[in-house]
Image (tube, rainbow, N blue to C red; front, side):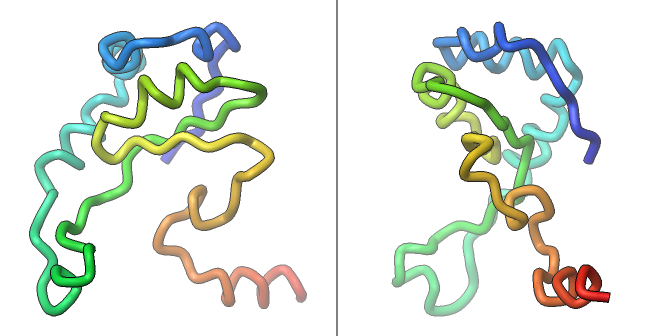
Length: 108
């Protein structure tokens, strides 16, 4: 995963079509297609507990300021998440990582 920093003009995106066009233009839409292809039904009792599908993680949009329109444009793209920079956490930056191990590493 490579971080990509873009201009603040991206926060002006209001439509999902524009967000998809941006992802294609940057070359990240291949990851979104992988997410769409890997959507599978969860095994076990989780289906009855409202966790019906397993889905991979895709691109992460990190924004600063009030960007309600961008959040509405991105929320229907599978696997794509959006988060404010003030609410960013380690689970979103490194999904599947072991927080305990990182904490022990940082304490050394």
